[in-house]
Image 1 (cartoon, rainbow, N blue to C red):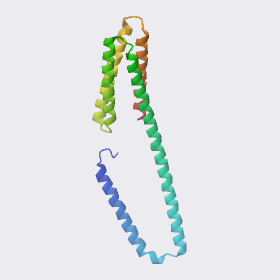
Image 2 (image 1 turned 45 degrees about the vertical axis):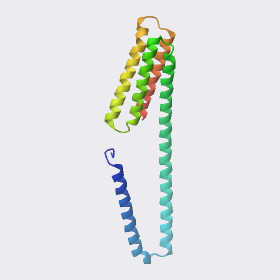
Image 3 (image 1 turned 180 degrees about the horizontal axis):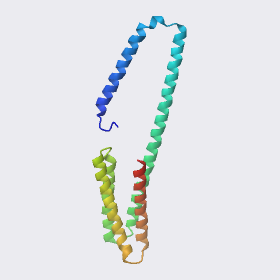
Length: 178
């Protein structure tokens, strides 16, 4: 809802509204301060205490939700890094030409994933980086599938295909959660 709003301007407007509300409340309180007795002051104090307690509760829930989302995102990133590392290590078992091609594509994939993470909330950058990652993933699948289509599956090719499947799974999890 506020994606296109300048945060600095929004901050200044909220601070100005806050100070205006404080000034209005201060002047209204000064005008009516002679009319309050001890009973009404105790009610105001109880109301103020309850409101501050509610604010503390809301802030606690807010921080708890933010911390759980941060932990989930961190876990997904670690899973993706582990899947990429596993693919890279298993690619070392392939013949030299394929090993070099897979390593180069994995480097490009990591660069595309970093671009995706740095894109923030810019839809154009997110779409471009996501499309680049999917394209590279497709190239990796084509490269890994070529030896499998030629004849019986060798263990190194099967291992690389399994790790590519893990990369795809972490990519789908991240897209659905973040």
